[in-house]
Length: 244
Image (cartoon, rainbow, N blue to C red):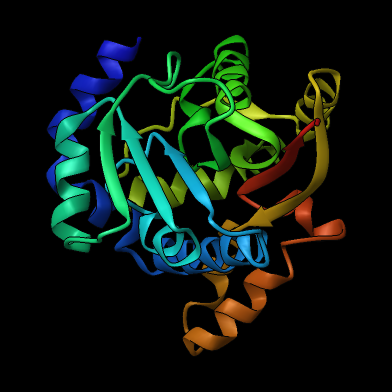
């Protein structure tokens, strides 16, 4: 499976970022995601060493490099990391390392924070847990992990509009794992991870606001972060801390 994903993203590397984040909705969701990461990492003790697992074309690297003293961007596909380098330019505190998320090439208790974005939905439930255990292994006691999942409720409620939207934009079928966040957080608690919260990111409901100014859409995106509307978010960021 890893080889299949790597071959796919090797071919997609040149256009991946534009396809994923170049659209109006993609850019709104990305900005909302970045704001959440800034909040999660703000106020952490320094120096702050961060690992981004399956960094791809560097969706989060800019934010992480601003928040951390050292950022390690790890991905299985060199072509994706090369696109990240081209997009972001040289950053003294960012280092790119080829590595498998199932065998992260670092010792135990190395990082103060570990992030992973738009990756775990590519894996089935059992493989997601293997990656989470690897993240936990390389995270320092007391360190923070922030990983996101596709929210099953969002995809169920909006199944038909999402199908039409993706068909109109000629997007490929997701083939993704839709996660029940309550089950995910329950599993984390049983595996020595203290839950620090969950935050919703994006929602295809935002497409209804495209005729309004961008600031309005970003404000609307904030409504899906917490409370009852969180179940309508496309993704859920799960924030946990490794038990000391």
